[in-house]
Image (cartoon, rainbow, N blue to C red; front, side):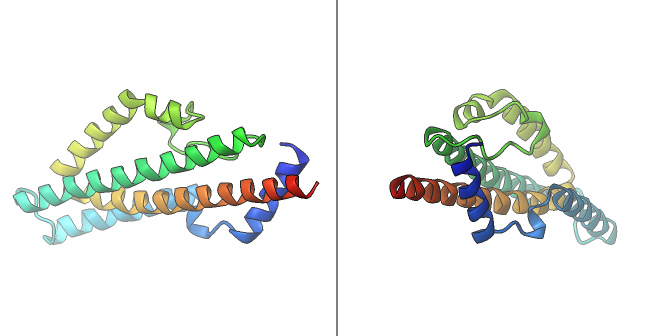
Length: 168
């Protein structure tokens, strides 16, 4: 990263610091806790398998969380693309291991088959076994928050770098 970009990114990280819930391990832990919670709700009878409403709610919660995640991920990649156009190095990466090769908004949009396969598989599982939807929705909510904070940090980095360029 250029020195100018490094200073700008460091300043943006100070202004918009990482929070504990942005850590990938925390997100994974929350998914496990959510899956456990969903399983406990199923065992206790709060979520009943075979009740159409519970299955419908599981599928809908997955669809909504997946849409929010896709939009926030795209927002992050678009911010990163603007950073690269500004002359800064790439400031983010995709956390989903299935999409680790994706480096830009265009590549994310083009990876339709992978995203569709994942969504059909997890959407089906969430519909058939609603407790799974609880864990996925909890983890996805943290991913959405993280994506918004990352894009906010990148946009601030761009702003700082451009202001420094004008000052020179």
